[in-house]
Image (tube, rainbow, N blue to C red):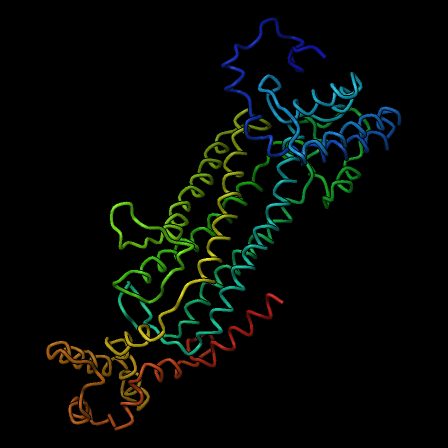
Length: 459
């Protein structure tokens, strides 16, 4: 095989080196080497089964590909920009091993369907990895939640203290976000589980190939029904990026809370030294850098998603060179997502919850105000009227630098005679949490039931 381009028969001039470098994708698509060889092994087996290639050629090509597979696994292959991409690099390396018969491997296929097949195989590997890591993080959340069912903390809306809740209830909110994330990934498998191979450049092939056999050999449910769609579809990659972006958004929201909670202003938790860093100038600092990085890398994943959508939005059918830009963002997101989920699980598993401080904060605010309103409403006072009465009591407390639990029964009954001595039990944060026993609520028994349900899902 000469050093000329494998597609260069009709060309009289060659590209300059910098042009080759700009157009080549081998610097990043070498990540698909195992998928590419796997696809070629199935393709040549199909070519033999259909009689398109003689058995001797099939055996020689298969042996060569298996040798390259072992070398790839041991990181022994050397790629060149001159051969542009992983497909032509493998074909050249195969030619160096077995001679001109290597050229028969490309019978009945194109790089267009080949690269699409590689990406399908890649994501069929990445999606289960993502769901596995999500499950590990969910397990960590459940374990910590079980330890803190009766730990009471302030619940927030608008980042203002709202009502006391179980710390476990707060943790479990993220469990259910992740459960939806996992479901989206799992659902996406059926759209990744389609085989482009055999679609050719865009129109299929004149050779009597068996695409269903190729699908069976590679573990796909079925081939694409339309050859144009097969080579131009990147929906499955967009969906992967979209699903990953949602996971990162959820992790970023949690990281924002960890960052706040670990500050001196909150002091709700302390992160392990393993997941924090210091300052080069301020000796006292302990910075939640890993949480901040996950928060920051969320933007990176969003960028990968928007980047691919932008690449695809104006493309006519079928394949266009623009689609070479579909890979780096997917590879980057896969790497980022794996790291973020792993780090997140470690941070949650090793952090210290400042239980006494958490519970003390619920006694120094007005997050129990709703208890007063509900108390009156339960005695058939219209809730809007109860709301106004309690609002006036809160204002009185603010003006006198006290809290609702500090009010005397006489003061409460002056506001409304329906208040009785049991109101002071109702005002306790633990009571406020325990009483919210509606399904999905923060009541301790409901949180226990929620954790039981979550465990059953993971099991």
